[in-house]
Amino acid sequence: MASQITVADIGGIEPGSTLSTEIARCWMDVANAGGAVGFPFTPVAMPVVQEAVQALATDIDLGRRTVIAARMGEELVGWVSVRFNDSALTAHWAKIERLQSHPTRRGEGIGTALLSHAVEHAASLGLEHLVLAVRGGEHLEPFYERHGWHEVGRHVGALRFADNDDRDEVLMKITLRSEQPARQRHELRGFRVGVRWRRFKTKWTRPSRNRYQAGFGCHRLDNADRGLLVQ
Image (cartoon, rainbow, N blue to C red):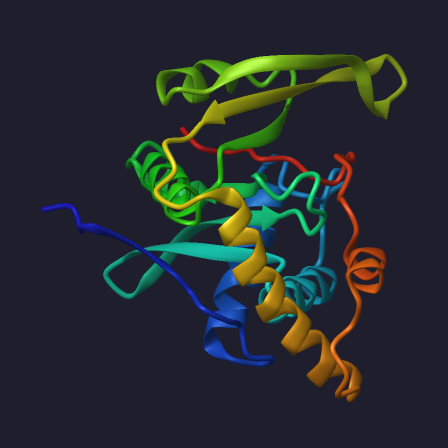
């Protein structure tokens, strides 16, 4: 009998913890199996991935993103990130990143479970839509379309992996039914980020709006950000 998939927000990642190692191991295995999850040139070694995990942990602590993990029994079998925008101009949407299931667990519904949970989580925060970028030529678009996503843009030849190996970058979007106004969500999360920022910088005066925006800004889509490997 197959194990049930359980999906939950991990809350945080402590340096050197078992969870940190699990996230890194899954990430490395997916990347080295060909998944477009932030390491375009493989093989990638564990120390490099562990540094990336620490960057994830920092983002979580600062309120910049949520990481959601999937388990089957005690085994971590996949994870996904929801990255928020800090600017008031773009606070009403977020981006799905690093959607992945372990290569030994493909075809077991892990990607679907993670994606569904991420969408529900984003809607509960009052977000109005989500976007993600996938690498063209991997035939991933149909998977997302089955779950309500649609293509809104395509940068032809954006990704060059080698001579005569250019790939498109495909931008996809899903519209959410929010339970909370996006502006209210932004104000609440902005306060939380501001508090964490003050503690991290050991400054005890709350940063002004401009300072807050200058510190975190609006994130652009870049070649390192791929949601992939969900089948």
